[in-house]
Image (cartoon, rainbow, N blue to C red):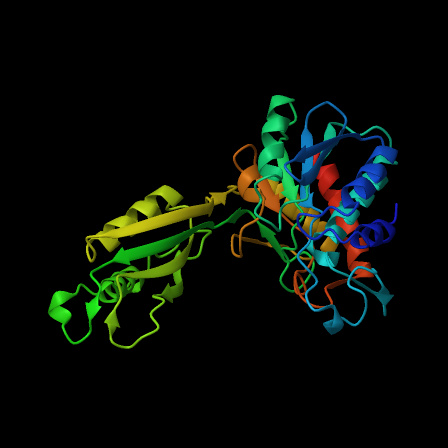
Length: 372
């Protein structure tokens, strides 16, 4: 199988989250032709699928998503963002590198692998339509179904575009956690000329934010950068100049390493703000906990396969944002490897056609290594 034709068919489905636009059916049809048993799993309005061929161990899984971010101003694109056009050996389209190209490369790799006869072990695919959205009805819902039906793999590779410069240069073995928080500090409203009759919540909030940002949260660890806190908004809503407001609000985000949990950081926020305000509220939303797949035999197999086919020994890294690997890590060891991500989410997202073929060869080598 040639990965290009499948990548084009997937890109031509404008599957902007939460729409599927036929992308999952395109993939399911391709997998069924290869002999996979495909389970279509709809949660809420989201289309997901789990497909498996073989029943024996070892069990290797590839995970990914068919949903994409909006194309944005289509007039800024050099062509239709969902036409999957090839120009000068480069495939253009929304999802080309994040991550329909990687899905097509993996399916092509499996097809080539199956041509050698009945493989040892089993291969599966967990594909969601909810990775670019709120991620509540996708991978996080499919995994319990997999557990209940005996489909938890021995190892999983997520096909996110992990390589920053050159195909093969980076594998993600973990990700930082993420917590968003909204802080509301309440005071006493009054006239600015009579400050003794007021309790200015802005002053309290600013002092609390200064304390939160005054020193690094930590110094990092062997595989993680130092945790970071970024204030993303301060809002009072005051439209006049002579009024001390009754309340002030701020929003912040913390990206954190394995030295913390979302709960421990929420407690820290409350303790710090409580030093500067008597009347306050904090609402937290934990997008995901940090996780790390410790280097070992399975990671070594992945790295060796990539190095053998690409000529590059990948760096093990944990940087970047969150991915669905944060959910998979609760069930089995997981790493991420895919295309160069230089154009993901951008206008004229693209991937060189030759890079699709190289990734197919890498994925086939990974399959052989994981099932050996």
